Image (spheres, rainbow, N blue to C red):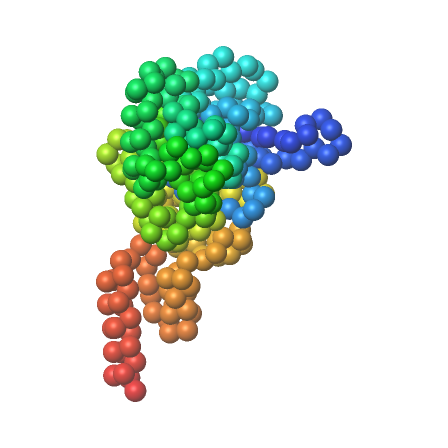
Length: 289
């Protein structure tokens, strides 16, 4: 079934003088089993969009399909718990998601809610913690004694333990060091390729997602301004600049070489292709001089 948004609009404080539209006529069609990156500056509607994926927020108008679920504006969602079992959401701030006396209880909560026995829940929790590099000795501790990076891992592990079909994460690499960021994104890519999970990641750092994501979506002021592949977004530096997304260093270098030296570097070229083009261009300049 995949994920489809049909003209979804969402407003905060709807019907009040302070009403504010966060999403405006969103149309999206996302395949299952893909790794999708959602980009946009602060206030572009990214977090609001994510909370529609598992029914925390419902459209003010329009409708969406998530797997086998159809959510329409103004209608109840009768199978909300089943939807949230299949669509796991990690919030931007982990302290919003952690609440139990110990990390282990937090990680066991989801599996227990969705029908696992206590031994099964502990096994699922330990497996999720191990996959994220969360040390076993942290499990008996209060989650609020953890560092920011450890809290982030615990929040992600608490959702991973439920084994959702769609895994939605809001700025998951914040507070993680470089090695932990690479490990997490590599794990998400593995879940996508090996287990056919649909991975949706919100970030403002295009550069870190480029090696992992299949598709990219850019939001700006509550509207979708781009949908496409990594190669396609790579060829649109002006879009990134207009929408407040930092342009990756390799792309800035490509722009400079094309602008200052007239070297044609295709957006979907490999580093080896680029190196060959640069070498040839400078060889021609040497011959001409």
